[in-house]
Length: 470
Image (tube, one colour):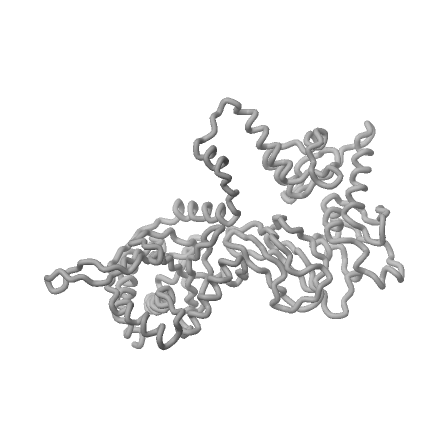
């Protein structure tokens, strides 16, 4: 039986994901767990893994296309299963009533070559426009996108006659109005509905840049931009915009835009308060040097911080919680997110079950996660399930900062650099290495006393790591 491949959800607020690149082509064999595609979500660029082994088939999502979460984007056929045995719903991921079966009774020759019946993109376009594929006469042995677009063009010409009634066009959001049938991508129709653009007017003006003059999303955005400029001819552009255009500033990535939205939402909706503490770091420095000699030369301070934070969370489980749907949720698993800077924005891969990993295993997990994040190869599971976040900017020379909580988590630890400072010891000034910690807390989950107790336990373990043996 075929296994469905769907667009995954990595966060509660995620609505869509974008296919950046297919790593496997339709008709290729795949193994379970093997990367199928690169997907851009609201958190990061991730690799979508095959949920089963078999033959990749019925690919209905194009590269660069935004797909609603939960929608089917492909099928993986079991050994011996034939594409011709699949229904229209299986091919398109839509109910059978949306589109008729892709072909009349197949001939014996067609059954021997089922993959040439209809291309996935042609099936998806036909489903969007409710086209009975049995009415199409393909140029070759397989119905292609060009065949569907040619049929649409003939329908459009017929609809232009006075006695023809308008045809309803549906977008991903539902019925957006009645207009004459025209060739436009689903994303273009959705954008047109949101921006108030008249697709028919764009088509009459010859602004469609797609095959056979089809309206694409870029055409809708360009028209909306032109209309906005015409509406405010005297408005002077902002200096920053002029400088950015002159300097060739690249377009912000979807990851950066969504990061901005999520941090803004967290800052506005989560009642933050901050606890600061200076920690002596002599023992941490010695521990780091010893572990690099005995365990691995790749041990970092972040690895040691994860180990210490996991132990402190186990001792203070009220910090390992979330505020969700108006109630307090405690998490048994201790999954620590690490804020990683990439060229496209900040991502937070997660070290799962951090309190159960040996230091050597933790180093390997952290290395792999950071490498995946920076090479845009994160998997969906790498970003899910975090219960606490660490953001370490010490390597950039930052003394201290306050982090914004990665909702729905209840806290984030911001870590500054280790540097020599003058502190008082027994009434005398002493120069010693110290570091500054800032704990950002969600006041709906954590009160001041609980946060202070957790931070004290954390400081105690950093100042004397032997406490981890207790």
